Amino acid sequence: MMITDIEDYFTLGCGRCDRFATPDCSTRRWIDGLNQLRRICRDMGLKEEVKWAHPCYVHAGRNIALIGALRDDFRLNFMNPGLVTDTAGLLEKQGANSQTAGSLRFTDTARVLALEPVIRDYLGQLMRHADAGTKPPRTEATFELPDELVAALDGDPDLAEAFAWLTPGRQRSWVLHLEGTKVSATRMARIVKGRARIIAGKGAQER
Image 1 (cartoon, rainbow, N blue to C red):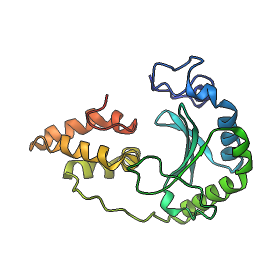
Image 2 (image 1 turned 180 degrees about the vertical axis):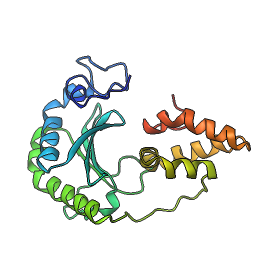
Image 3 (image 1 turned 90 degrees about the horizontal axis):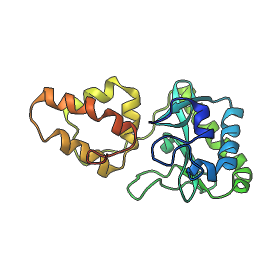
Image 4 (image 1 turned 90 degrees about the vertical axis):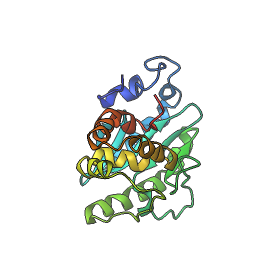
């Protein structure tokens, strides 16, 4: 069961796997660093919310950054990274299929503290873009989205952002899943049924 209370993330984990609320949870290994990232984001005046079972930091109605913990590292992922000027040359792609570098990865708390000025700079850039309403450069997909999916994304900002963060392969899997039927009502039903998996960052065939 994915968490909905922000404090649960920092005490129990995200709730997306069976290591939740156990000493083996990835958040337990990196808790000191995660708390430092949290401090920086809150010091910047960002609003703290739970999205996709992770701490998400919001400004002017726009998601700015997301904190995450994996087995091998913990991360600060910048939303709309195409708007960040990576002056320090430190941003990495989240995965092999990511098109824009927007992640800072850490394996110790000391690096978080060392990069605090950079983190604040990049958060500040995105906050100013949020204030100005600047939109990130659009990367065109190599496949067309079904009309039903376009309508669903237009009417559901959280779904739209989660879908945009899927790897191209996962996005394509949903397109193929929807194109498996020509019946519009069935496509819409598949979108409703699959929404939670898209929000969780999963492809159509992932459970």
